Length: 245
Image (tube, rainbow, N blue to C red; front, side, top):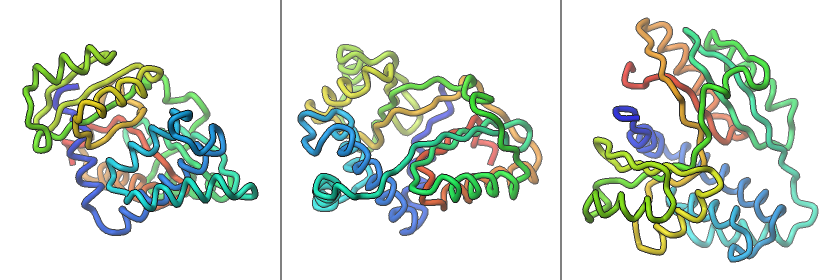
């Protein structure tokens, strides 16, 4: 994974503009609603809600916004039902793209996702057409600027907590776990005061695709930007080596 730090990309997305911040709040609000509906409003008894709260805090969502979202989801039996959908397809030069959505209108979301692929000369495929090229992993990113401890100590702490792997990148430390171990590892590190820039279950590409043509890079960025701007889109994973761009 060396040289493919996700962190620079995360920072870029966070700093992009205020609209991106609004999108993060929308995404996390929906995830809170789903987590509360599935497991109740008490994070002590709802590990999924605990993970969403941790993600919210890593993205600087204010505590009162988190609590308001939990209260709203818990108190509103008639609240919107969000449905999870995953779309898979190809961008220029065969770049694999996975789009995870959380929506109250599947038809609208499907049309928007299809349109994003079309406008960037991509192709929407069938379920499973690219997901086999990714590994589902828990991933915890620690910003080197925020962490003052020793790298070896952090590695041993992470591995002792049950992590699978530890990677020392240029600007961050990346800790990976099996999806089922993610919550326990994250809570262990949180309890020890280790700052996390990002903590989530994600899809990590097994291999990366290089793009040489400017038109391919432009078209892929168009797909990703259109998906990024869609409030129904929760996560987008791809195997483009972004150091090309």
